[in-house]
Length: 418
Image 1 (tube, helix red, strand yellow):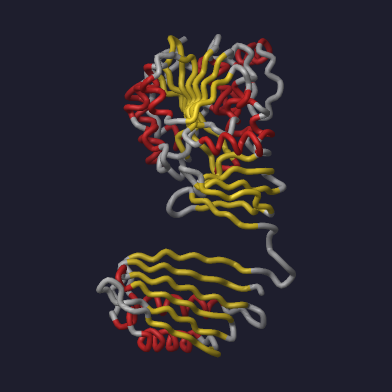
Image 2: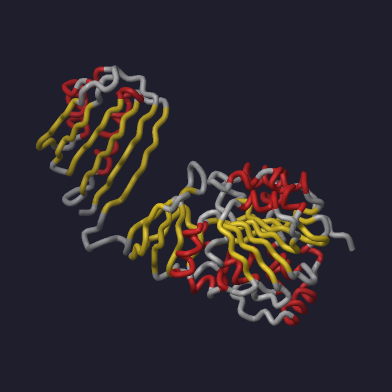
């Protein structure tokens, strides 16, 4: 079973039209390239599709190889091609031959853009890993991933595709539109860092607003502070909230039903625009800017959040991965600096997100970097915050110690006045 699977998606191709629409021409090309590569043809099948709405039909074809197969599909109306070559490496390593075959066909189509993928298949002694491999992009060129032996749920909500998966490392994990959101065994990295640095920095936080955060993880951390007596949580997707109530209780610990909490299903931007309330703390616990949460990463929305902050209040949010998404981190930091006096950027490695991650606390008064480790320790003791896995007095200051490449992305607005 062990082998190599290569795929290529070709865009804006400039090759001869005949190999897009004529199965004989395409078959001849693929046969020639297969023979040149040294692979062995044992059979083939080709189909030309009829015209559709005045456009010529494409061709689908397969060449069966002694080593496995080649499959190709042409899309003449889009000047595109999808192509894959799989070879097993049972008696010898056919990887070089497979790559030669793929590249020979790609060259004939003369694409302007190509997206290639490489997948190692199987192993002679059994699966190379246990479970379904899911990859997530950090940017156009970098990916990371996890294996999940169990898939618990997969459904389309009114707003996004929701999955629950489970692995020994992560426990039950929530995935939305192909992006990891939170996981039982790992959630403390993000939720403790999102919540406690800002909440500890506020001398007497009583009222808070969470936009997003339907899994309840940030909420659960916030309610550990005994000064908090009222929290409003607004999430667009009610099904995320209900599924988290049922399946992610180890993360939220029932906080979504705490009597101090008002849970609203709706548009967070609309809530902020229309509310007459003010809050000591605002948390933007959102999906990334390229998702439906995009309008909540604008100067206009940040200004709206500023208006609902009480005197001495602050807001926390995540910015992305500064190494992989420097333009995004720089742009969001600049937008925040247009609105708030202080942008206190910080960061940590978050395993579920595959990278060192940027977050920020913004305020017109609050400066979390001004707290000494002794002051943080005293507040942790006074508030009896014991059940923490990541955050402590020493970590508080370390979070704000930025590596130079990240510091250079952030406007200098958080100079501590002594």
